[in-house]
Image 1 (cartoon, rainbow, N blue to C red):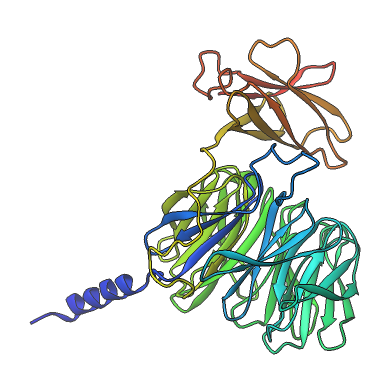
Image 2 (cartoon, rainbow, N blue to C red; image 1 turned 90 degrees about the horizontal axis):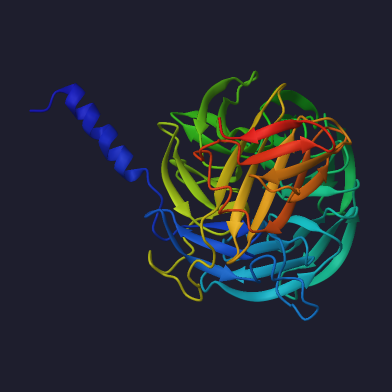
Length: 454
């Protein structure tokens, strides 16, 4: 006869077995550098393959190139039958059939779209055109733009309330949130927020709040969907990207990707948000979405070129899976496949793993990191620099090379980001090199401020 304690342990073990994604579910990432959509089976934590929408950078500059460039944003239909993919350099919205992984339509919009989503009734697709000042409304049956909704400059993302009455659009250039009446396609309120750069918003599971990220200042703003007022601001950390919610033990928790710290930070969602855990991740966590059963949060690793699964019961990474280059948006869709190993129209992974180099300050609190991706005989080198002097030129050197491999000018906040092409990986093979200082960042005409190694 089992004791009550043994019975309870058995029930918990059974619940743990049941709390797992279905083999018919899929995780998708929008891979900005390889211009692919990576498709994962969350039940086995495996990459099934990729949907090839374009060529791997830098093979995208030919005047005859017709593929997509900078595959970046994602959304989906209420029935999970259609995946939206936004490519912000080719200004396109691609409609993909999730059962077949085939492109069924494409719409070209204005300059630099960022994200898109279906309306609650599935009859419209709204795509934020971040390089301009409007939302493009598209008919998902004809793939044609039917109207435009004027917004603040640089709309960053839009999502809909489930009753279909209101939509919320954050901005990446204006410190406000636009509240839009869906039926009339008009803005009914503008809510001021703490900074102009928000790339992402998500509703709490009960739709009582939206939480929006501020990538430029490392914060999250909470807004009541009832009063349409800001209810709180949380200091989260350097490069606050996306967030997801999961209900764990009856409590709703927020999982926020902090790209500059390689962490996912977990917060309570009561009247006062409290930091509950900081989960170490791979390089530069970006996209995030929760499995339908709330047992996992999946995150994309922008500089790690893959996906990690977080067990929400233990707040630990339980799987790391290689994927496309520089994944940005990530979504989780349930019951879209015919079988667990179903992989129609997918191609094998087109890219190799990335190599990451952490930069350390010689003085002060500046920081940065470099990601190197092999392109054959040469490499693509992307640099991320933070907390340097504003509006100042910095040069990057590798090993004993006399000339810099690249130069960057910081913005008003002392940040810079850019990509260089050259033969770098062999000479910057990692922080374990004998001298430890294989990569150096110098102020132009001045001293070194950041180095790799210890």
